[in-house]
Each structure stands twice: as C-alpha cells, then as structure tokens.
Length: 333
Image (tube, rainbow, N blue to C red; front, side, top):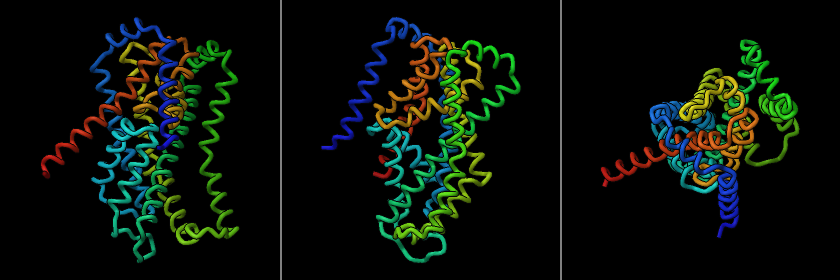
C-alpha cells in the first residue's frame, strides 16, 4: 500500500472540505447559475492553445537530449497527461509521471544521444525522459515568473493611476506583496545560478557516473534549447494564455479584474497548484486563489468558483483527450 498517495489524497480532500466549509452555499449556487457558458468556452480554447504550445516546448527540450519521437506523439502524450492530472492522485505530479513513462516507452531502441552511437537501456531512457519533463516544468515556472515581473513593470509604467489606486487599497499588504515579487524575481534569476552550478560541477569533476557519461552533451544542448529565443517565446506565450484563460474565467462570473494585475498574481496561483496534494486537479490552486485574491476585496465564493472553472478547462480537455483515445482504440480493434 502506498501511504504517501493516501496521505496526499487525504490532505487534498481535507483542504477542499475546509475551504468549502467557509463558503456560503446559497451564494455559490447563484454564482454557478449565472456563469456565462460562452465565455467559459473561450477560456477552454485559450487553455487548449496554451497546452499545445507547452507540448511544443517539451518536444524541443526532449529532442535536446536525443528523445527523437514524432511531433504528433509529443502532442498526444502531453494532452494525455492533462487527463492523467485529473485522474491520478497528486495533481500535476501524476501527469508528469505519465509523460515520463510514455515518452521513454515510445522512444524504444531508436534512441541516440548527441555524439553517441550506442543504444541505451530502458532505465537510461527513463532517466532522460524524466529529465526532459523536469526541465520542461522548471521552464514553465520560470516563464510564469517572467510574465509576472514583466506585467508588474507594465502595470507600474503604463497604468500609474490604476497602480496608485491599488497601492492605496493594498497598503496593509505591502510587505507580503514585496515578498511575493521577490520570490518571482529569485526564480527568474535561477538560470544564472544554474549556469554557475554547471560550471562548478564541471570544474570540480564530481565522480557521478551518469553525469560524467552524459552531462557535457546534455547540459550544453539543454541550455542551448532552453534559452533559445524560440523556446522562451513559445513558453512565455503559453503562460500568458493560461493567465488570460484564468482572467476570462473571472469574467465569466462577473469579476472585472484588471488583466495586468491578474497576470501579476497568476504565477503565485499556478505555483500553489503545483503542490502535489490535489484531488482531480483541485485543492491547492483554489487555496492559492483565495490567498492571493482576497486582498482585492473579492468575495470568497467568486474566487473559489473562478478557480474551479479554470481547473475545469483542463478537465474538459482531458475528457476530450480520453474520448478521442477511446475512439482510436475502438477503430484499431
């Protein structure tokens, strides 16, 4: 019995029950009845495009370490992982494990590492697949922070009156806001720290077998691809689309929040969502939304429903992916 999975599930369920207990159920019902369905479908479309761009980013990073699988398979597996996020325990962790396993399996014996002609074992393929997923996840978080800091600067420079208004209303929260922005900035400069770490590893000549065998080619190619203009642009656009999708979900229930302010706060909400205790993808994101949006004088019920709606955009995409997979399986049989 996997006690860690059970513990994560219990924690996630407890978190959802705790949040739900603080909400006015009658107001929740009224908000749900007033949801603009068409606006929500637009949010789903934005989320679909964002996930497609994420799949392309992951493909580039995977091919940098030699996982040469077709574009179609990468996109298919990425959308399968969205469905896995909704089914497997642990939120995005379940989807990442799915991606790691599937791409390692799809690569098979055709795997060739850059400048190496020998074939590799399933275990080595699994490690490289896991590395590509990990770097992809880090790249996504980094792009979120880039989006947040950039939108904060745009908000400050081009909308001074609105910025001053929010600054006065949030004066009590200036210290937490400053801390939040500093966290985003620290994650943003993380690539520089990683570069120093790589140089140190190579200089120190640490005797790690896997590192010694593959590190030079892997780090060089991953670094080149991760911070190429193409990958950064794709990644940044995908995160902006996710943020806009969340903003549209807010609008679907009548919350007219400034879009730049939403994109400043979205990284924190999405980072909360990465905590692996979600139940079908719900829980931590809703907690993060309440924590970050409550100071904006929004009521808890609207915040909760908007976050759930954003989660449902992925649920809809996951359901469509499962349906398409079932149809393909039935045709083969």
